[in-house]
Length: 548
Image (cartoon, rainbow, N blue to C red):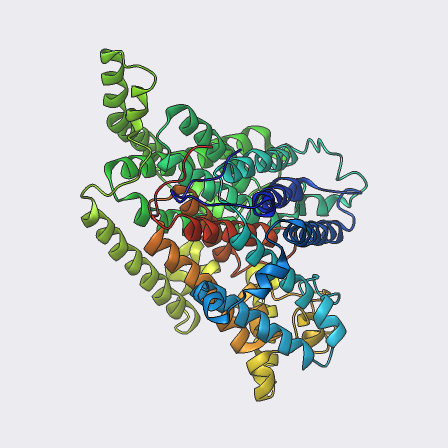
């Protein structure tokens, strides 16, 4: 497959032609093979995924080094003509933020009371300095040596739809992979598909949903658009059937911010309407399935019940489908009357280019509504937790009230983590206790807790970084994510593939408020972020990626 063209003629040597293919292999390994790779069922799944990722990055670095050394333009020549000024000019804000984050993590490790554990992360979830360094090394290799190709995201969807399908069949207790044989009965619902823990599973599937939604909305060719729509429906089913409330944070981020991209033209408005209609329809279908099958499927409570048992849900769905028929119907009728050719039928969904066409007012209106919603949630949190008015919000009150039992004991973990952090000396507050040493920090404080659990992770990625790499490390990490978002907004709003990668990162980042940083779903997020940055750097005219 050829790479995306940039319109510039280049005289590439044999090594520079080989390097993008090495990146292709690495991307395929991480986006397609890594999520499906399992050895010995769920036993030591974390280690298996961790070692697979390590092996993939070692392959990338070794192959790139060999290709750069044996080529006509060798590394020796490169370093002989190396100039710091020219090198620094290629750095963007996101590159700098990442280097600062890794530097702080390195200092935190060196200055830690547990250097070995900080480096390897063996007392946590293997997210020590070593793994963080691999993320950084892979980032610079991919963004400097690769060529963005749109089949990356298509392959990602195809492979991870298998993850979704296995998750759906696990919901029906079919256990097609026989991974749950011998498991304790009351723990079977906590593990699913080839990912394991349902929270990690929904973090991954949330990214699949985001990519599917953006590519469906922006795609112009009707056959491809139908495939993305099928991917969207399957991923929504899988996400909800993952029976983790974490999923709804991804959906809130997706449905809340997607209009800011889609409401550039009427095509985007119509696509968003169909996406929302599909979501509520899936919720209703799952509710019917649960009612019909009873105890044959796990019970989904909490957020799902709030939506599925809402008065008038079925009426709302019927109304939405009528609206969809109203806005899409004339296009198909006109196409049939005119007996359009296959190539012209593409225009039923508009051209593949996603250009603004006078819907800026609708974007601003949505932005205002979004701000009001965020302020409203902030007010509700204050009202519930400081004024004691949880009863005002009905079923939502349990989500707004933070106590030790909130979020399956997350409230207890967060409270103790902040108490520990407040007791840190100033240096520890700045650079942390050491990457992935959270369990060591909280060991004595939570010993003999009423839940009978050992807490080695904050179940909040940002709080986890605050404790382990300090305030400085957290700020650098947030700067890394935010600078990526800013670059996408400023420079790639016409590139649906970069935008799809961005929304995947956004959905992951939303779940990260209540989720774990694990080398199971997190490498996928890093990979998609790398590809988004690669797409921005490579397509300086910011046009769409051309077909390959």
